[in-house]
Image 1 (cartoon, one colour):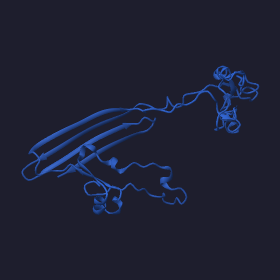
Image 2 (tube, rainbow, N blue to C red; image 1 turned 180 degrees about the vertical axis):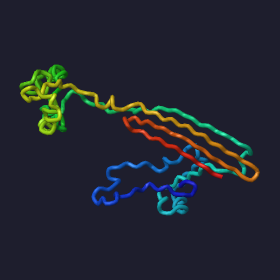
Image 3 (tube, rainbow, N blue to C red; image 1 turned 180 degrees about the horizontal axis):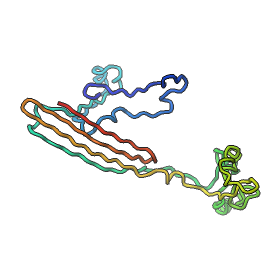
Image 4 (cartoon, helix red, strand yellow; image 1 turned 120 degrees about the vertical axis):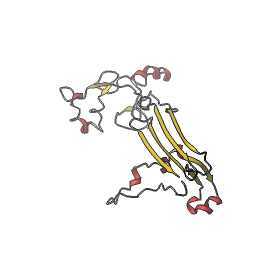
Length: 243
């Protein structure tokens, strides 16, 4: 609730003419409270239980956050006052899970680069270590017959699930006989290099003017947020006026 006006976060179920796919099924919408400039908040109150329901009805069954924005005040100090607020902060991911780099894609301890299952064979670089731990030579560095040790058919053109789809797109990964070229089978860090350091820059100016009979308040702010995920960002410009 902002200055007596409820904020509604509901979204349309479907686009016009779309009778099969709902708008909300594959979309993420922000909370409309994001539209509020923090620099323009005068007071915030949280109502819970029966008090909230009594004032705001069934929609307030889980409680209400009541926000009052800045406006002119008869009790404000007379004169003109200009306030500037600026801040800069950085964001980074706190932690990521530990991922194993001993076993390859595949199933039943057999390599298959196009299969998402339990686990395949052991990466060539780990074969000696795993065999020594087992006490016998369970694994070999020859992953696919006909290919050198430590290599597999290039996964873009040599995996049964995708070969037929990508052969014509990536001819550079085929040899003169049309056979997929050898590619080293090694684990890659696809998580650690994905997340970036984010940043938040905020700048705001607020002007208040109070006289004998009038009191005015106005402000403008700009927020720029670069997220920790590549190509995720948001920008917000807020203008407010009260009297």
